[in-house]
Image (cartoon, rainbow, N blue to C red; front, side, top):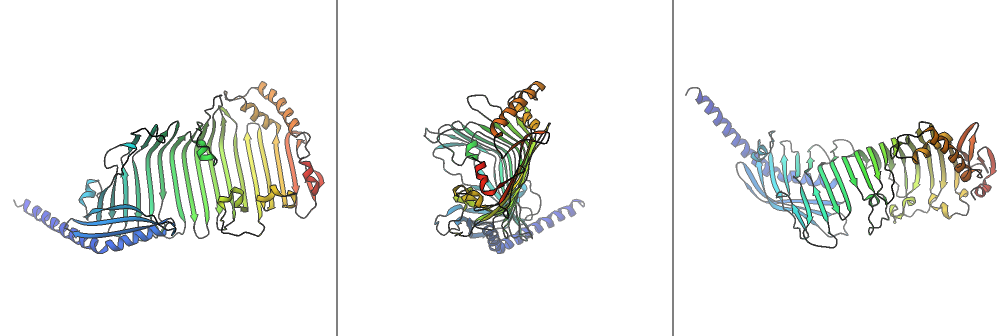
Amino acid sequence: MKKTTPIIGIIAVLGISYICIAWHTGNVIEKEIDNTLARVTEQINNSQNVFNVQITHSNVEKHIFSTQTHINITLLPKDEMINDKLPLIDTDFTIYHGPFPIAALKQGIFSPQMAWIEYPIADPKFDLVEVIGARPLITGNMSISYNGDVTLKWLTNGFKVKQNRETHFLSDLEAELGASTLTFTSKSDQSTPSIKLDLDKYHHQFDSEYLTLNNLHFTLPSEKQSNHVNLALTFDKLQTNQKNKFFNNIYDFDEYDLDTFILDNLISKVTIDPVNQDVDTQISLGNFTLIPQSSYSQPAIQLKGLSINQKVNLSDARVLSGSFTSSVNSIFHGKQNLGNAMIDMDYQDLDKAIFGDEFVDVETHYNQPIESKVTLKNFNWHNLNGDINIKGSLDITNLDQISEANNPLDSIHNLTLHVNAPLNVLVRILAQSWDPDHHDVTDEQVELWEEETQEMLQHLFGDSPLFKLSKGEEQGLFMDIDIFKDSNEANINGQIYNKNDVLELLE
């Protein structure tokens, strides 16, 4: 009895202390809930220009271990021309008090929390499809730390969707969403919230078309002092036969595209400077595979070790300036490894109209001539026989109107273009391309294609002064063009021409 008495006393003191702390936490929650909701609302609204979130609460009832309140969350578009609003949440919540909320302990969360909220998200009504999965489909929880940090999570164990009646536009529909978590974190010492999405799997199939995505992760971290916005997106695999829907902006939705493309191990990072409107994009891809599904046999094309880096400034309403580099470690055509390649270029004041009218602000009146410069620092294709290199630069006025000009050279200030493509490199590429079922080519194939390639080059470029089929003792395809603003002469492959006569060489 003597040993158990102190223990009972300690337990009693701890129990009373916990009740007091929980009661005090309830008082703090009651006083601070307005400030916390206001801070979270401000961070969300300031982090983007699409919508405003409106969060309100009412009917607060405080108990020892919990507080009950009614919370309403609504999205309102920032565009005043749109009057629609989207209600997200309108329900009663139970806020469990810290320091160790019972609901958090059930989830295996043992770190101290000022408050913990769990809530189911009402399942939407599905009239045309059948949804298979444990109810509720989506659950949520929110934790508030003692320093005011708020973490909101939406979770699902996954569900499947199938059609439940014959409809013209939902025939053969199947969709699956795997286990996923959406996490939103608002820290008291940071100006922007952080967002994280983890998705185990997504799949849909509609008639003959499908798309499958595995192990996707997206993060938008909060920034304490930096003015930059950093985004990161990764996934293990994306596979689809909807190629043209991704790469062709004039896709005919009445015809199916069954060519399959696969992206493996994507890692992408985007850094945005909202003040200067600079965007820096870095992408690496383990493999890009295109598998033709046409009626006649075509080999698969695979790019291994693809990387892309692009920097662009969007501050001007009409022009773009930036740089673009890309490289690929191996280019496979069937079983043949055609080599590796890279490109490095930059551009200044490139007219957005080149990419289509939809990229141009219609309210911006741009009456001044646009002086653009594009520099191809290098394009290189390397295989076992050597290298193809292409370099050049172009200074031009109103690039988007050059096709309409009577004499395009009047708009060109400086033009340089240097092409160096040795014959043995071209021969190997062509020989491999015509034998995709083997890993390499034989000496006999190389000898045959050397003759074929020479005949082809002679037929296509032999009579053109713009190209040369030899340089010194080396055979191949070569070009050296230099046209400068301050001269009326053009140097083409060592021959001097009057600049006004250059157009005749293109005929």
